[in-house]
Length: 128
Ligand SMILES: CC(C)(COP(=O)(O)OP(=O)(O)OC[C@H]1O[C@@H](n2cnc3c(N)ncnc32)[C@H](O)[C@@H]1OP(=O)(O)O)[C@@H](O)C(=O)NCCC(=O)NCCS
Image (tube, rainbow, N blue to C red; front, side, top):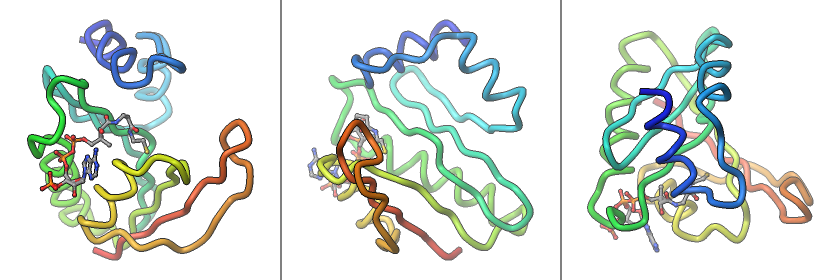
């Protein structure tokens, strides 16, 4: 399972692939993961807040609603557990991801300058 996730992650983030061990470490550190053949989402919840750590969909499966569906499943899970706010960071130049989050109710709340190899990170938040 973790090897499949690592293969999928490499397709989604070819410049920064995570290994099966990286995913094992995330799980050990308390992260939750939803994954299917073509998509995954990783988040961490602490007290009444959650942070989306990573989302990816295989290039040949994009624009079919997989990421939006995974966000919905995660949010239902978080609501059941009393989580009030979800936070994330996304690269300023990652238009597909920014659009995904915006269309699913996430609002921009700040900027971390030069956060990703010289590219600003946009901080976003959704209240559940
Ligand atoms: C961002 C990503 C996860 C979106 O996955 P996806 O399954 O294609 O997204 P969905 O099909 O659920 O799209 C939902 C909405 O997001 C927006 N969206 C998604 N891809 C988009 C694109 N390329 N351009 C513009 N809007 C886009 C649209 O509003 C879309 O709704 P629509 O198709 O009805 O217009 C995917 O492009 C990806 O894996 N990218 C590489 C990894 C990455 O950057 N992850 C995010 C890191 S923060």
